[in-house]
Image (cartoon, rainbow, N blue to C red; front, side, top):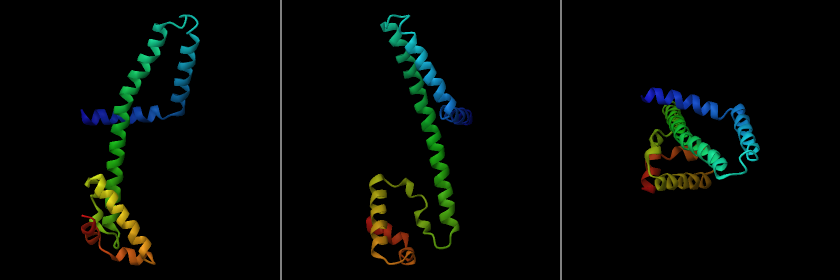
Length: 137
């Protein structure tokens, strides 16, 4: 089920992001607006577009969130591999995406202070990630 949903969500997200889909949606709205004259701008006429757009939006939220989750996880895996592979990279940063938002903000602020206080990139890389993470803990 998960593979099927991921495949459908990926294809749906790609289709929804295509320029032709935008043009199609725009044409549908123009056609709906033009039909307002036929339906005398009735409540039923308005209900049609409200219902249609609500259903599409509701379903699109799940598709987009699934795509974002997979993309985020893939990016994290790639970054973790870069951290693991580079000799001077701080491997302690692998998995920091599991920290709380407050911890990540504190870590980012500490990194920014470290960079501002040092003269060269090498000086900032020498401080261990473990010590930096302990200081903000």
